[in-house]
Length: 295
Image 1 (cartoon, rainbow, N blue to C red):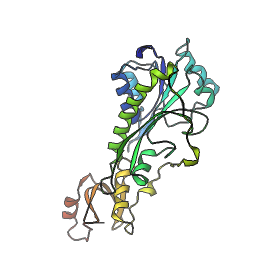
Image 2 (image 1 turned 135 degrees about the horizontal axis):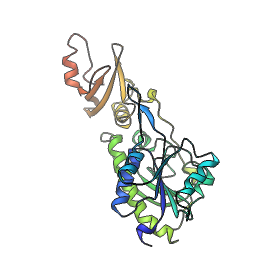
Image 3 (image 1 turned 60 degrees about the horizontal axis):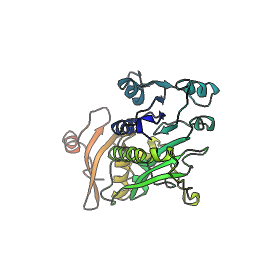
Image 4 (image 1 turned 90 degrees about the horizontal axis):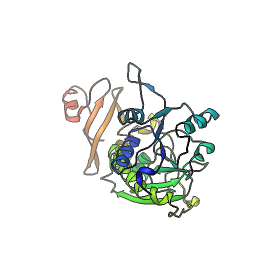
C-alpha cells in the first residue's frame, strides 16, 4: 500500500505532536484531519493561544477540529463528517485527552498510539519525566489503543537511549529524541499494519508501572537528597515547572546543573522576578547574602 493512500486522522496537541507530524510528513504520511485541544489562555496577560497542532494544521493546509471532549455523541459525528468514505486508521501522539471506545473504533484498522516509554513500563501522563527520575533507559512503543490507559497490545517497540546517574538527559532533549524515533517507528509499522502483516503482542500487565500528572511541588529540590537525585529533578522538570529551591524566601528555579565531586553544581537559574542567568552572575548580585555555590 502506498504511504499517501493511507487515510488517517491525527490526534495531538503539544510540541511532541509537532515533531511527529513533521517526521511523518517527511516520509510521505500526511493526515486527512487533525483533532486537537481548544485554545487556552497563556502568559501573564492570559492571551488566548492555539495549540501547536492547530498552528501546524493551518500552516500545512490540513483540516482540523478542536473539541473540548470526545465523550459527547456529537464528537463522533463531527469526526466522521470530514471523510465520509471512512478513515483507515487514527494516530495518537500526545493528545492529552481520553478517547472513548466508540471513537477508537471509527477507523477500519483501529487507533494506534506513539507512547514514549518501553511499555508496560511508565504508563500514564508523564513517561518522559518519570523515565529520568526512575530509569536508566527508555524508548518508544507503538500500541493499539483500547479502553484502558496505555494498556493495549504492542505492535512495535524500540529502545532509544540509556544513561548514567551523572549524565541523565534533559526532558526537552529526551522529548525531541523520542518523538522523532516514535515517528520513524510508526512510519515503518503503519503500512504493514494496514496490510495485516503486523502481529500484536499483549503487554505483560504484571510488569506495568505507572506515572502521574506532574505537580509543582514535585520539582522542589531537597537538600538532604543525594546530588544525583537532585540532578534528576533539575533535568526531569526542565520544561515545567522547573526544579527550584528557596533562598531568603525567594524561589530560585534551576534550569541547568551538573555533578562535580559528588555535589550538584548550579549553572543556570531564574531568580524569582528576574530573567534567566548564569548562577555565577546571580552570586555576584548577592554579595551581601550567603548564597550556596553548590547543593
